[in-house]
Length: 183
Image 1 (cartoon, rainbow, N blue to C red):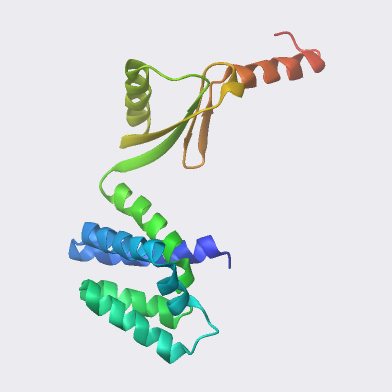
Image 2 (cartoon, helix red, strand yellow):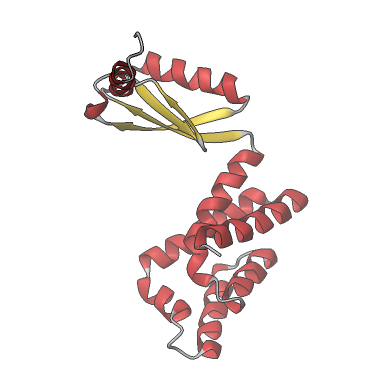
């Protein structure tokens, strides 16, 4: 099983618990705090995740850290489950998937917008609004610039790609001409 599938499965299980007990945002904050701590303290991550160290000692270190963080009982149990199942090294991926699921629970979806040039605030809002109408959810747009597009934009929402770039239009025209189709 691929690591992303594993992380997704654990995140899905935690979001179901959060949905049921109404603490989905609490769990998101706690996961973010734990990942942030491991980012700031790479030695901690090594101490907990390195299988070359004694498992009992690593579990004790994790328990001590969890106690200091004063997390919810569910998060404590979740972290120990990840450790016991040998999945603690998937924590960052679990946290990313969990954030996506928590956003979906709130009716928010994330999309990527790639444009050839900087968009005006009005154009940005118009695209965001159109995507919101298309999906029926509030859309958060992450933007990137790519001058190779020549003009236009490419929007990605999950697996859906809406490509309105001039580069793609020119490539499609070239392929049509090669096949002898009228443009």
